[in-house]
Every structure is written in structure tokens, then in C-alpha cells.
Amino acid sequence: MTPSDLKPVRDHIASRIIGQASFIDSMLICLLSDGHLLVEGMPGLAKTTAVKALADALEGDFHRIQFTPDLLPSDLIGTDIYRHEKGEFEFRPGPLFHNILLADEVNRAPAKVQSALLESMAEHQITVGLKTYPLPKLFMVLATQNPVEQEGTYHLPEAQLDRFLMQAVVTYPSRDEELKILELDARQQKEPETAPVERLSQADLFAMRRDVAGLYLDPKLHSYIVDLVQATRQPKLYDRDLGRWCRFGASPRASIAVARCSRARAWLDGDDFVAPHHIQAVVPEILRHRLLLTFEAEAEGVTTDVFVNRLLTLVAIP
Image (spheres, helix red, strand yellow):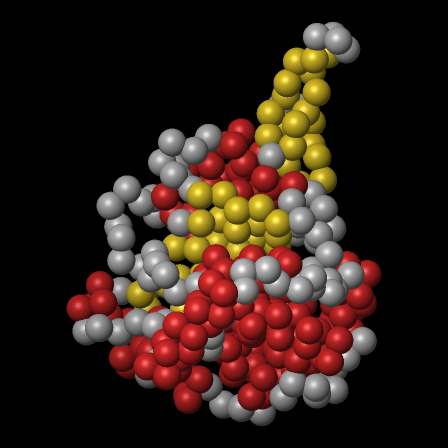
């Protein structure tokens, strides 16, 4: 398999939204790396549309669930229903048993619901009572959260944040892109019916994942990845300001994520091996949600992106 085999998927998503190339790349990298994606952005930026377009282009089913404060774990997992004709309980699967799951405003659900989602993401299985049910081999969670609306939200625990392979930030479109959005909407109003999409089969997707996993990553770059992640835990060794800004660094799971995603980035670029620039391209979105900054950093307007970009300039490239 080659990146050209994935091009129809990218083209279909690009035909449904304008711009957001970085967001599309993040979805494809997570798809190829068998990971989950956390998406942050203001309402109305086509996050849901993009995820639906991705699901339309893949063999499998899609489900969207709106997270609310009154949501129950059974609304995600499913429940046992008593069948009178059989005289026994029968399990009815919930939304988590779909291939692509869009968890809208994931931080609006209480801790019990978040723990149910965490088990599915971490263990690839669901426990109901005394029984454990495996999830589909293709299982991907794309969760959205709003960066501004804080009322009625629940803090996502670090354990759950760490299970997201990457965090993408969807920004406002440029003026030219917004004009194209109006044109696209006008066309869709005139011609709402779209041609059938040729879906990428799961067999082909899994073949792509095997190719990505087999891409060469030099041992020196293994050391570079570990140095980058270790630097988030001991930032004062690299820069005095970095030491003031970071309370807690990333776990070893971040190193694994960088290795996986840099391979996917290199594969999408058509390269046969991973280079330092592939690593640097994915590190910001991998570390963005894994670092906890100090109050001092927040007071100075320092974000995790500022911290990571500064770190990338200080850690030596082999």
C-alpha cells in the first residue's frame, strides 16, 4: 500500500470542508497509528462535518453522541434487556461498539461516563457486570471539546487525556477560506445529493497500518524522541524559563506516541524512513495535552505550544 491509496479518503474530507489541512492530517495520522484524537475548537468550525466525512470514506459504521451532564455510562456501553420469550437477559450494545465514534463536548459528561470511555480507549473492551465484550478491531474515538465554554463542564482526568494519541486545535478560517465556505454551502444547497463514496476497506487500512509500523526509525532518533520527552520532566536542565513553566511532564506513553506518529507522518509524505523533521512535525500535537503548566506560565500567557516549540529549539538533533 502507498499514500496514493489513502488519497481518496483525504480528497473526500477536503471536498466537505474548506482548509483545515492540519486537522485532516491529524485524523489520518491517528487512523494510521491506531490511536484516538482529541479536537479542540470553537463551535461552527466543521469539526463534526470533518469526522463524518472521514467515517463516510471508511468501511465501517459511525456514531455521534452528544455528551451532557445527565449522560449515564449505559448510554455509552449499552445495557442488559430482559427477553420474555427467551426468559433471559440479552445485551444490547451501545455507541461504543461502532467503528468511528464522535464524542461531542466530551468534557460535559460526569466522571462515571468518562471512566467508561477510558476503558474502551485503553483496553479496547467493555465490561458490563461480570462480562467483558471486545470492541471492533477498527475502533477510533474522536472527541471534541470547547476551549471557551466552561460552565457545566467536567475536567478531563490526566489518565483519559493521556489515552488520546494527539490533540488537534481547529482554528478560524482565513478570509479567502470563509468565502469558499459560502460558495461550498451554496453548491450543497443546490445539489444536496452527493455521489456514492468509494470506501477504503478495513483490510486495506490494516495493511497500511502494517506498512507504517514497519517504517525504519533509526536508533539515534529513538534517543532523540526519548530526549524530547525526558526534557519535559527536567526542563530546567535546558532553560531557566522552561523550568518555571512546567509542573509535570509527559509519560513514556508520549514517547511511544511520537514514534508511532512520526512513522505515519513519514509514510504520508512518501518517505521510506523517519527523519528528524517528521518527529518535530508531530511532537506539538502529541505533547499539547500531556503537559501541566504552572500558574506562573499561565500568568505570563505561556501555552503548551509555546513551551514545546521552545523545547524543540533546545534539544539537540542527532
